[in-house]
Length: 134
Image (cartoon, rainbow, N blue to C red; front, side, top):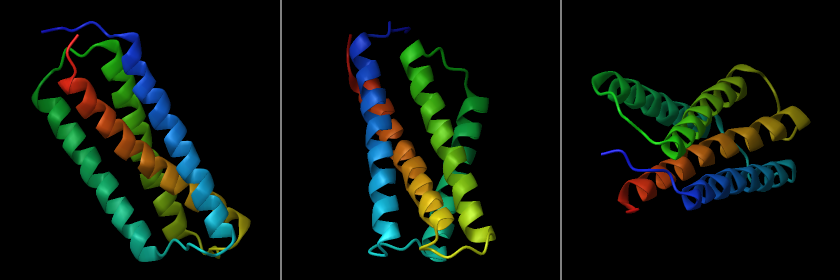
């Protein structure tokens, strides 16, 4: 069953991206003041979660072809961008010898949490879209 995409479904994506950006900025500020530090164990955990999400997405997309409306495709795009961003920034934080309070460490920590928040919010939007009726 192919459902048309309503304009109110894109509001969820806008809210998801805005919340992710806000979480990234707050994390960068708290990391700069050393109230919150991103430890290597936390980076490893986020890397593991992102890799599992990527594998599940790959397996699910290869098992079945979905006829998704445009709004779900934009949410899936945001989801994959969040996964790839989380993988990239966690590898950068793990691989580069940077201090947590350095400007690069603060920026990477903010981008890592913003990417992970994009994963969580886009998944919640996908779940919300699957249960709403037109």
